[in-house]
Image (cartoon, rainbow, N blue to C red; front, top):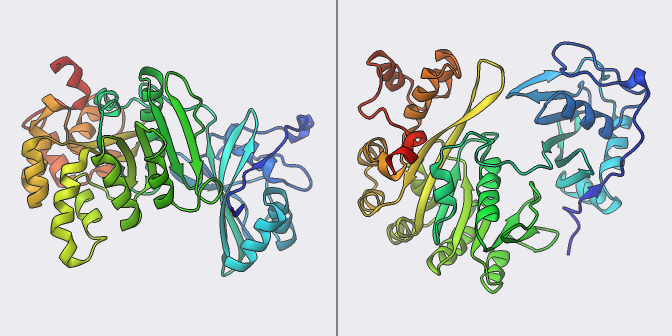
Length: 403
């Protein structure tokens, strides 16, 4: 098995002297760094600054992404080629460095015990080498900690079917799925198998048994891992991104044989998910595949992040729960009817994203300007605000009260 995803475990080092202390925000003060910076120091700085990502490239100062925005660090120098090569030596094995030289890109992970886990992507650019480091908490979040709608707990514990979490890159899809799997782990006695590229959140078995596999390290590809998973007595399978027809075929087959399957896509709206999946197939295959997918879907969640008044971010959602009537609309591709049912059928926990945004506006969570930026239909949101609510003002957050 190739070691392209072989995780680097970094042993804890003694705390740096006081003149190397880390500030709380790169936006407000200058970070003090050692004479020769290391990735480990940079990760510590980013962690203390509550950054989600680190951007490093030759010829640029490192930048941190904080609450969705990228800021240059003030204490680090422009990265020269020699220093970048030392970063590669720190983070990658020799075989990984050879693979990067051959293929010009590489995905792997770094683990700092007691601090954070990192997803690392290395690549070449016009100006030289570059890497992006995504910081991943060692603590798996809960649905309540993320302030997700209560219906997510019920959806997580369904007995079969395909559950898709969709949204743009960086919208928190992996975090939402991790929280949903965490809920299953806490309340159900099941076998959960995850197939990831690479592994992000590390789960520990609680009431459920969890088996996590990484493509390139524990298995050669998604399709083979899912096929193998069906022989491993699973109840829940998480397949990561549904990026090709082979993964989709395997996920559908698993969901149709009595398993819950979690997957992700990059569509912005829930109703677009089936169209995106169907588009992976040839024209003569699309109609029967639309029927299969509509039969397999249990729920579709589309999400985006909105910047709150305190500078942090919160997720807002489209929530589509498959019912007999919804299944017919999905098969026929009736977008307007799908949206209308999502807006009206709050008893089943459905909602459209603008309902969720309006609810948070009423609570003063974020400004109207930020709401408009996040809304998939800003004009419709303005109409809802002007008339003081949509035709059905109850969103999925009040779903438990209806039950």
